[in-house]
Image 1 (cartoon, protein in one colour):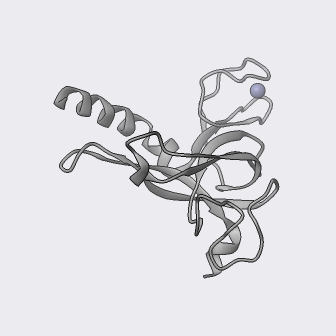
Image 2: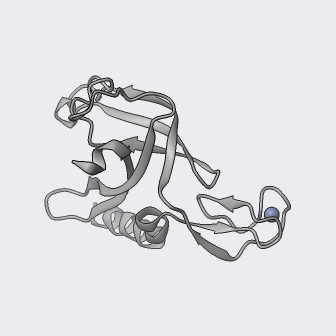
Length: 150
Ligand SMILES: [Zn+2]
């Protein structure tokens, strides 16, 4: 188990800029912004080496709510969305800061329901823990923008 925890920690360490700062790459040839980062542009096949910091702003393209598996009811449901970043790329991420995750229509202190097109922003949150004394892994999640003013 300890071996597995070290491996998970190494992956998190290698991907820390991507997961904590939403760092991708931009193609110097065609200016395509790419996330997650890659080494070859999917549009023009040029080598890509220039980092690009995404704004973390975007909108919900589609979403679904997953119920926890049997025996993990305490984890609660998760709302997962495909998000279209304002710079262009799509990514999958959990939607957080929902007052009642069982019902994405019920948002914290907001009369507006979660829906396709809802503006969202990146936040950094715990995604998992390796036991009580193991590594705590953080990554990006997204929340509705209206919540920022609370
Ligand atoms: Zn390109």
